[in-house]
Each structure stands twice: as structure tokens, then as C-alpha cells.
Length: 196
Image 1 (tube, rainbow, N blue to C red):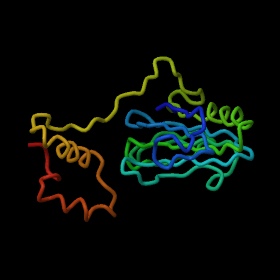
Image 2: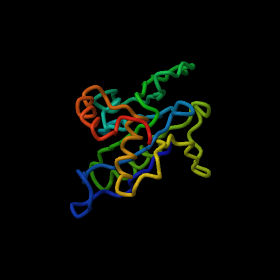
Image 3: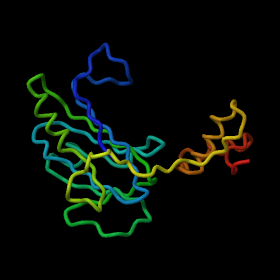
Image 4: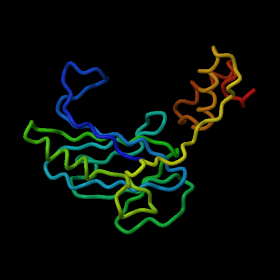
């Protein structure tokens, strides 16, 4: 429930998937099992930005940024479908299909002289628990809350640990409808039942 920010531009020699050499990236792994989170997006002026919110299956839940919501300052509340609390004035609700999700942020950097301005945008991009809003998050102790860890049978043979964890995670985070035919093909493997 805190952002980690990239502080240097990537180069062609860096390792990673889809490395972008003209953006600063930030990532927040989020958990709204205990309470909703409020995302603060600063005014980005002429900076191109994209915030992609994805579920545990990497499906896009929401997009925020220049093309989707413009360049103005805005606030979003992330909460699961069964949450029915009060949404503060001026805050737009985004319903998450699961309690865990990821926010990937990309701010375009136009050159070395632009680095301080983009770093300020990163500093002003944050998530905070609803109970703390409108205050930004506290980083003292970097408390992340209690994660929903899928219960799995640790007594299975070591060779089956991966499959048992997959079974447990699929039960905790049911796949989207489009993936159901693939998931049902796992029935003969015993991956859709309870722990044994």
C-alpha cells in the first residue's frame, strides 16, 4: 500500500521486460481487504502519464492518466464490490474485482533537465487508507497491513508444491470468465477442489 519509485532512467543495457528508456516508473502493490485506499494523482501539466491498475490475473481494472482522465489533479477510491461505505466528496470510486491489485505508473521524461519535475510528480502520487484521507500515507514503519495469503496444504510432496499453491490461489482469486474454459481443463489434475 505504498509506491516504490524508479529514480533513474533505464538504459538499453538494463535487464527487464519492456524496459522504457524515457519514462520513470512507479509501482504499488495494493490490498483493500481491511479498508479502501484513496489514490492521489497530481496535476501533470504537459507530462504524459499512464496509471494502469491490474488485478491478480493482470487484467486491467482501470486506467488513469492523460488519455483517460486528463491532466488535472484527481482522487480515486479503490474498494471491493461488497464495500458500501461513504465515498468522500470529489473522489471517484473504482470497484476492484479482488482485494489485491497493482498500480503501475509511467511518467514520460523529455530529457535530463526534466528529471526533477517528474520526480516531484512521483512524490505527489500516493495511496493512503481511507481512514487517513486526506492525509498522505505514513511511511513510518512502512506498514502494509495483513495480506490475504492463500491457504495451501504444506504437507504435499515437494514436487507438487507449485500445483497446490496454484490450486489455492485460483480458489482465492477466481479467474475471469474468459479464462474459465482453460481453468476447467484442470479438473482432471484435481486443481479445482479443496485441499487434501
